[in-house]
Structures are given as structure tokens and as C-alpha cells.
Amino acid sequence: MKLPHYELIAEKTLKVYEFTSEGPKGQIPKLIKFSETALKGYYNLAFGDKDLKTGEIDDNVVSNNGDSEQVLATVVSAVYMFTETYSYAWVYATGSTKSRTRLYRMGVTKYIDEIKNDFYIFGQLEGEWEEFQKDKEYNAFVVRRK
Image 1: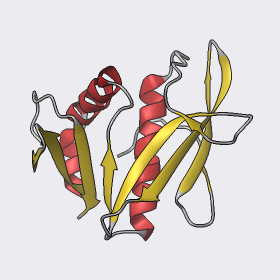
Image 2 (image 1 turned 120 degrees about the horizontal axis):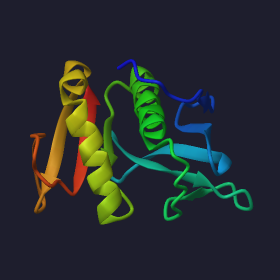
Image 3 (image 1 turned 135 degrees about the vertical axis):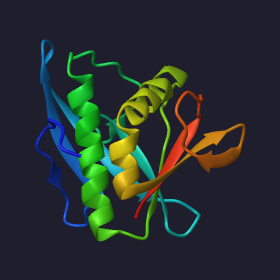
Image 4 (image 1 turned 180 degrees about the vertical axis):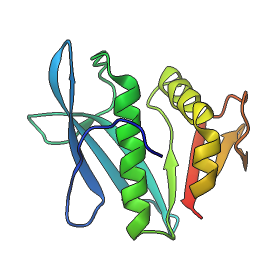
């Protein structure tokens, strides 16, 4: 997908990415991490503001920097970069809150045709996985490169 996004700085493993959100509230450092789960080949996507004291992700803070679409496009860009190297990986994502999950679902819905060109995508509903469909309130998502 070709959407405006921020420049990513990736660690050598391509499992951790940093970028800076720019908007009315200034420059806000962000982190994206792909962590292997207990299920082999499944990675959790974590994303949020970078805590400058700990260097870790704070996924509870609300930045409201006026660039949410560009930030989400940057996360998508990281998923593309990660799955270029880890093509076998399933990437699991959900929001830290119900409203964030809804925001992510709306972004997926908006670009679902482009996403399906490159990825298999499933949504979780009441503990069950199904191929992603528009207008369903999924609790989580999982994607893998085609």
C-alpha cells in the first residue's frame, strides 16, 4: 500500500521500529515491536508512544497529535517490512482499549481490498477466527503475507 507514512528506523532484526509523530503537540517518539508468542510463528504487534525513561512502549497514552491516519499507515509499513523477512509469520494485533481496536478495524476496513492483495487477514469474534469481513466488530486481527 502506498500511503503517506513516517520514516521508520528498524533494528537489525526488523522486530523493533521507531518513528516520530509530528503534529500540533510537537514531536512524539513512537515504537512498534513484533514479539514472538507461545504459538510458533505467531507474533504480537505492539505499538505506542516510546516512554523516554524506560525505552518501552506506552500503549495507554492518547497523543492526539492530529496525524492518526499517517501513524497507522506507518504501522502498516512496518508490518510490510517485517513480513518481507518473516514471510511465514502470522501477525496478531488488537488495541489496548476497545476504542483503539475500533479505530484499527476502521482502518483495515477502509483499505481491505489493498490489504487482501498482499495478506491473508482474519478477525476474531467471540473467540473464533474468520476471514475478515467489513461491518463486523472484531476483537483482534491476524495477518500473514501471501
